[in-house]
Structures are given as C-alpha cells and as structure tokens.
Length: 281
Image 1 (cartoon, helix red, strand yellow):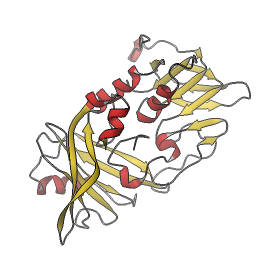
Image 2 (image 1 turned 45 degrees about the vertical axis):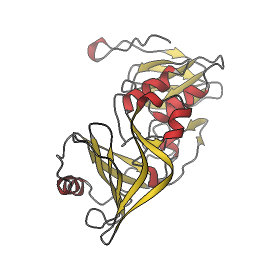
Image 3 (image 1 turned 90 degrees about the vertical axis):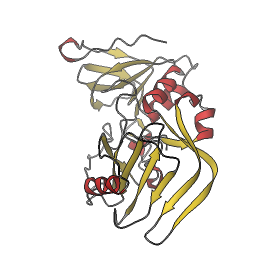
Image 4 (image 1 turned 180 degrees about the horizontal axis):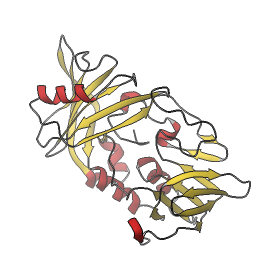
C-alpha cells in the first residue's frame, strides 16, 4: 500500500504529478474504478478534497451478496431479510429476494482502497484543460496530468465540457437524513404524503444508530422539516444531519475525453438513493 502523505491548512504542499490514470473522487465509484485497475501495472492516482471515508452522503445499505463478493463483509453493521412498507392506509412486510445490509461508510471505503494499487492525495479538483496526449486537471494544490481521467466527484460533474446546471433546474432529487443513536430490527419505507408528496421516507438501523430520512424527486420541495417530523413521530432525536443531491437521469459517461462514473454519470436510480451512495447503488 502506498503511503498517504496528505497535509492540511498551511502545511499543504504543492502537488504536481503525472500518472497513467487519474481518478477524481474517492467515494464508492472512484474507489471501484481504482479497484478494477489493480494489477494492471498502471500508475493510478486518486484525489479528493476529503480523506477516504471522511464524508458520508448516503444511508449506506446494499445487497449483502454484493458486499460479500467485493470483500467488504467486515463493514456490515446489520442484515435484513425483509422490507417493511408504511402507507396512510396499510402496513406490510415484504420478504426480499436477497438480504440487504447496512454498512459503515468509512470502513467500507477503507476496505475498497486496500484492494487497489493506487496512490491517494487530498486536493480540491477545480477544472480540466483537455489535450490529445494528456489532460491537465487543475487542483488547489497544483496541476495533475494524465491521458486517462475519471470524474467520480458526484452530481456537480466538475470536469464536464458543458455548462454546470445547478439545482433546482438540474434533474436532481434531494435527500436528507438524521442519525440518532438507537436500535431497530427492520428496514422501513414510508410512502406517505404527510412527509413528502413526490418521494418517500426511510429508517435504516445500523447497529447502534438509525438512519432516518426523507427524499424528494421534486428538487423544489424542502426535506428538512419532514425529516424532523418523521424522527419526532418515531420518538428519535433529529441529530447528526447529512444530505445530498442525487441525479435521477443518466448523463453521458464520456465527454470531452473524460470518463464519468457514479453520480457524475447519473448511475444512481432514484429508487436506490438512500442505499449504497455515490456510484455503488
């Protein structure tokens, strides 16, 4: 494993480097790309403005078989054979065709990174200058050159060739959740306009905490107050917030000679946004 010589604040050193493959973004999608390149003999560099596993943006649940087959079993926190649905008129339990598991985001990202041959450093990606032989990615610490560049930076699609469309005009859904301490035994979904008129709500237990949130397919609808109200109805504290925008349509996977994966390519179905996070849903 390469040593991660990352620094912060005034101690941040300039970063100028050439590599065979530059992966911008160190969440699920970027780490999955680097994992697939392990053993290829390529010099792979991953950059992100945050440390690996530092900034969770999803409720973090996935089919248990996916986690096992990817060597990520150690990150599992709780496993569920059923999904419980709540509507204004009925409640019912659906036996899943396979089990789902909630997992620890930081640990899962660390396990993915351990399966790569990539180097990692922290830097904020700000743009790209394209060229036939190698692209130059501009960061707050310096320029990085590579013939193969992957944008796994999320919905903002930072390295896109076209205009950057911002919410609410962009085709994005919005989600917010709280993480109160507590325990639960069921994955739960609410299809209930009391909380959100164009979306759904959820509660995902994860061994000592619950991930309770609301997601809306309509980006103009607010989700903070409904999230607080759902937590109150469940007699849980509305604390430890996290949220994100989630693309709900596919976007080009290649643009201007740059590859896009995960949320930057719209690789997330809106029915899975509360699950596996950026690019792993």
